[in-house]
Image 1 (tube, rainbow, N blue to C red):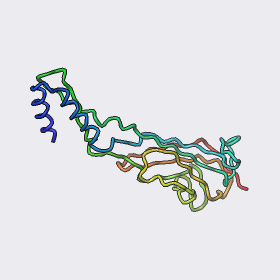
Image 2 (cartoon, rainbow, N blue to C red; image 1 turned 120 degrees about the vertical axis):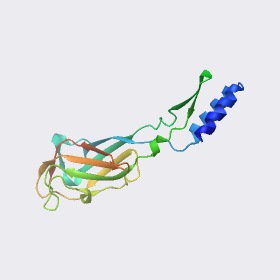
Image 3 (tube, rainbow, N blue to C red; image 1 turned 135 degrees about the vertical axis):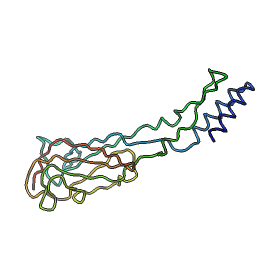
Length: 189
């Protein structure tokens, strides 16, 4: 296919139709599929969800039933789809773009995630083990590339302690991103 465009560009440019080839190759960029996206960052924060409006915890303390982890996942803008240039050696000023194959991968989305704490939560959840089963997640992350997600704690810890929660996102291309929230003391009711 690329050879076809190169042959077409030389033929059209030799005939003085550089405008036509620019339009043809520009349309390739608009039709060669979805733009490349890749997860590039995550941010995790603890929220006190006890009042009518969620807010930052006062004195870095929150009751277990009011704890909300709020995650933001960002991706690339996808503007890199048309980065390969075609140049005509006969007319140096004639340049057009062709579709970027995105290195064989158009999308990198969330495959899975793990929530952990640096402190023992209970006997079944020692420090640095998955706490996913202790959180209610109303919106699935799987298949997403960006957005905001809330994780609601469903259970009190065995003892009141300071926890530092970590969210690890594993993407479909095997990359992992981590972010740790500020330390928070979880109070029992």
